[in-house]
Length: 268
Image 1: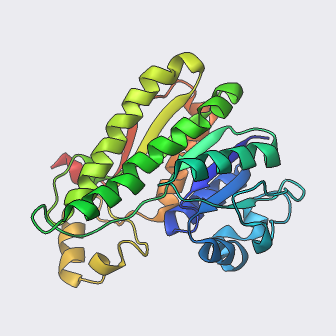
Image 2: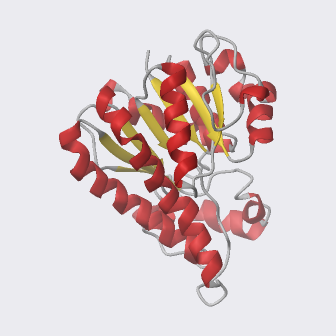
């Protein structure tokens, strides 16, 4: 059985990914900066119930921390993670390997979004968004490199259609996701010799706490749906299915790819 470490696991996309990978038989290490939300998602959310997440019971909230979290019958382990801190990233990877014996998949799903234009965005905000979305994914990839090389594992990062479609009032977010997409290609090239595959998934807007503001605007929703040829929104489960595919043996020859999930929006 292989082990997946999911960052941003308390979010809507992270929870859906955990459910999909758990259903595929993977052991799960769930990491997030918000430990209360992570524990609540594990115990209360139907998509991430202990039964859905793995073959055994989950660790309790008391197991949260930067040290090793003891696995219970190969159930999920919970880890407090700050992707803006090098030591936190390294400690969580070490804890996952100690708890599960190996690491085969890193899913970079941690992210933040600030809606502002270039002129409205101050330098501190710009740096913060990049530090979480881009540099945070890099920190985690670098911290996990040795473990992934040992297992012949892979990385799947969550990018966005904002990486290649310019959108107003998403300056820092768009730049950060463009960086994630190109970093995916660079790491895929550099780490192929180590047996590590690196891919990303780029969805259009997905219902979540991060996008609740824009999705509460009927005018925005109408414009967005009109721009999607398939005429249907992208759900967290669609992103999760794409991640599960890229992590599976079916994608053994796939690396350096950005799998776009936008219902055809980028075709226009």
